[in-house]
Image 1 (cartoon, rainbow, N blue to C red):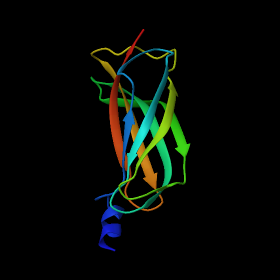
Image 2: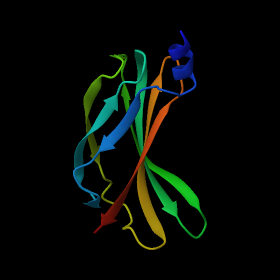
Image 3: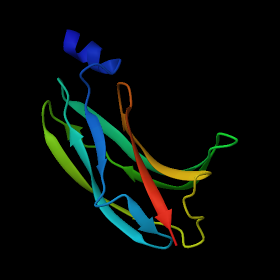
Image 4: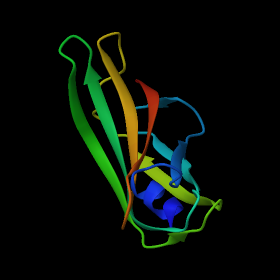
Amino acid sequence: MLRKYMSLIGIGSAKIDLKLPKVTYKAGEHIKGCFLIKGGIVDQKTKQIQCDLIMIKRSTREEKTIDISTILTSIVIHAEEMLEISFSFGIPSSILSSTEEISYRFETKLSFNEGAESRDQDIIQIIQ
């Protein structure tokens, strides 16, 4: 019972990690990777995986969501289980290149029916 309550506040809950084949992409390129989910100390039922491509302007600290990929999923991640879910994402062809002023990252969130979200961030570089 204690394990269940700990997972509700994020201690020992399942974790998500976006695995990408590389960190540099061209505008318009199609990315294929996967979400690696590692079960926590108790079984948990997932609600959704959301992966946002975020552009950051360093001088103003402004963050802008470029695109969102959402997978609605209702699966049970068993304790200590490892699960891989395919990830596919198209970089917009009109996106600005990475510079000292502009950078990009994927923000991934795994939501559960009960419990704290699992989050992951992956920095990528966009070239023309």
